Structures are given as structure tokens and as C-alpha cells.
Image (cartoon, rainbow, N blue to C red; front, top):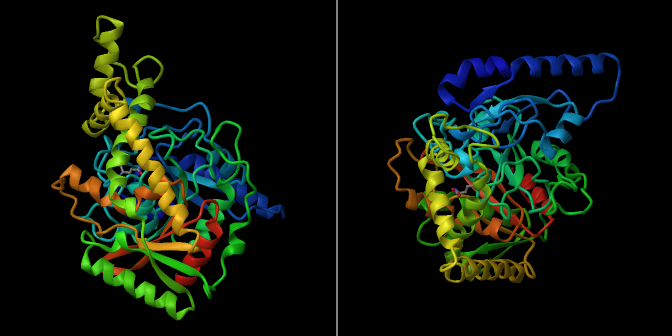
Length: 445
Ligand code: GLN
């Protein structure tokens, strides 16, 4: 049925880079047989999902929507994929994204354009635009995205679906193609909060292949799904409700605040004073890490290779020149610049210090509140015409980036509409307290 739906709408939405129908149907038949034989199956067994194309799937092309990897077939599964496979789930295919997850609109993809499921003339958000549009358009039951500065939550918000970025370290990054390793985190995109909790149950957990994965117990997240926020202290950080926010988006968020009050939550205004530095700090740290991570695409080890070059250095140079798109090149240039010996202290080191201040802001407010409530994005999905200035787009991540900087969990849930387009409500939790996030989200939904 999901493939029928894909058949029907994929031409218009463009969520997928690769479909894997034959294997998916074989897997479905296998689960059918398990059920017929009376075997007990896991909650996700036989449930078809879509995978962002920067998550490694053994034997199935994984491109990061980049020319440099467009023929890359991984020889191993990411930790999250191995976990999902164990549970007998079904992988429908790989979804379109901004090249190497750098972007907010999925337009930097080398592969194709993806359209917003609510209005095909608008961007689906990004970088996990394919994963979010696929859910909104009914082209998958669940999907995986990755979030370095908002790439799960913002496209979820633009498409009116649910997306969670777990606490940094909750989910192994093994097999997630690295963009900015200290910020990247894989998470689910789903229709509702219950589905998100179910997928989270399967993908979380410690993994020896990722030294930053946390050796902590994974609770059954579905147990957190209680409709009850009585006495919950919800903070509204005033910096997230200032100038840049669209008035109609703000209106929807304030209606949600009223709703939480009615349900017995206590609303407290709080301040995260270093918020204004988050985006500029991110655009030092993320490109710095990206420039190091992307050094591996040298035309030798894997991916695209220029065949005309006369020498090895020329081969690497031409392979990278032809293989990377302009946004990726912009980040590599920025990253190598801020890491170069003369500038390291002035930029990278400073940025790391500011990152600590941002994290401390959160530590401070979380002494006093249980969760924070903000808009996921100051705006709704904008036109898919490539007219937005890239720097203006960078600034719109002001609501999501601080959460990655501090390694905290964040969820985006649908919260009404502004001029016909979905608005997303973001809840931010204490480290490893996904349960309170899920509870607050489930109560509102
Ligand atoms: N939009 C941000 C960027 O371009 C975040 C991307 C992401 O989370 N992968 O870097």
C-alpha cells in the first residue's frame, strides 16, 4: 500500500533518492510468514520506513545526495539500521537531503528537488527534507533523519509532522556519514508522538563503535506517553520570541502556551542570554568539523574519481572540484580557514568557549524548569525558488542550533497553521530526559 502511494505522489513530492521495492516486499513476505507461524514479533516488524541518505545501509546505495558519493554502496549497516533490521522492520528506500546535510531546504541536493507535502511550491525544509516530506505525503510510516543544527526538527515543522533530536550520545552515530561529529545525532520523523517513541526505543542504545555513545539504560519510551502535564514547569526563553519571529507563528505558539496552562502546567519566562551567538558560533564549529570529516573524499578511497587527471594530487583536486556542490565547498573553505594556524585561537577556540557559555545558559534554566517551549522555526515553509539569501537562511536556525550546541534533546510537534502552512512547536529537555519531552508532546498532540 505504501508503494502504491509512492507511485501516486512521488512524481510531485520527490522525497526519495533510491527505492528498494524488491527487498522491501521480500521482507514484508517474511514478516507475514512469521505472523502466520504464530511467532511473536517486535512492534516495528513489517512496518515500512524511509532512511535519510546519509545513513549507511549495507548493499543499498548511500549518496548523502552528493555527486561525490552517487555510486557508493556501503559494506556495512549503521548501528541504527542494524537495530531496526533485528526488529524485522522494512526499509522502503533512501530519502533526499541537502548535500552532506548542509542546508535547510534540501535544495543543495545534487540529486533532485523535494517539495513540501502541504504546498508543492514551498521548500520541505532541510536537511532531512525527504524524510519529513515522505511522512507528510504518506510515502512512509516512519523515517530517520539526522540533526546537526535542526535538520530533523525544522523539516518536521515545515511538513506538519513529529521529529525528535535525541540527547547527544543517546543514538550511535556509527554509520551516519559525519558532518559535524560533535553535533550530529540521528532521530525519528513520524506522524505522531507514539510512533516516534516506538522508533526511538529501537534506535537508542550504547554502541562500542561510537566512543561518544552513552552507556546509559534505554527506558521504554512508550511508557512516558501519559496525558498529564500537571505541575510541569515549562520555560519560555524570551530570546526565542523576539524580533525575527513571524507574528502568525508566534500566535500559534502562544495558543499552545495557553493550552498547556489550562492542562495544569506552570509557565515561567526564562532567559538564555547567549542565544544570539549560537548561529555564528555554529558556523565556525560545524564547518571546522566538516572540513576535517570531508577530507576523506579524495577520489581514492571511495566515491567519484576524475579519470583524466595526470597525477595523484591533480586527481584529488579535480575529484573534489567536480564532486562537491557549492554549499559544501563554502563550508570546507570556512572550516579550513578557521582551523588554520593563524586563526585557530581567534575563531575556533573562541567559538568553543562561547559554546560552553551557551551550554551553561541551559544548565542554569533547567535548575528551575522541566522543559523549554519555543517555536521550532521563526517561519513556516517558504517558496521553493532559490531566492533566499544563504546567510538569511543560516539565521533562521537560531531556534534549533543552540539545542545541538548543548547536546540536549528536542522535539518538534505540529502546532496549527499560519497562512495555510504548518507551524512547529519545539520542546527542549534536560540531557537524557526524552521521557519528559515525550510526555509533554503527547499531552499537547
Ligand atoms: N541548516 C543547518 C546547516 O545548514 C543545519 C543542518 C543540519 O542539522 N544537518 O548546517
